[in-house]
Image (cartoon, rainbow, N blue to C red; front, side):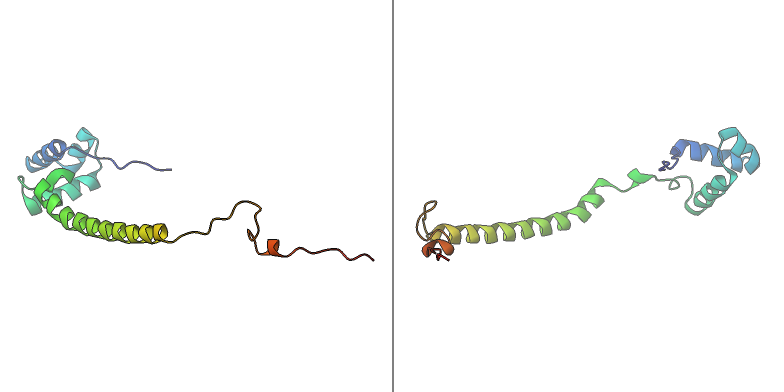
Length: 124
């Protein structure tokens, strides 16, 4: 069974870290905010490593120009590949149109390999 991962807002994380910095114990803050003490310790490590301004950036931290810069080369490669495929398919289509297909009506002579020769039964 799939259980979605709990996500906490940045404001909640900052509030819990400020309470820990004010001198409250991890257990008190964990009970007050209904968060596990282990999670608070994880947040505290990030808080100390990055500082208040850069801690807890979330998923929206990556700026749009950076995302676009990563995506543009990928899309250009895809466009080039699709252009090559289109050119190939146009050539194939042109060849099929240039070839004259033999026109044979249904049931006509030579419509299948076996239709050219008729067998007669021998009397026994």
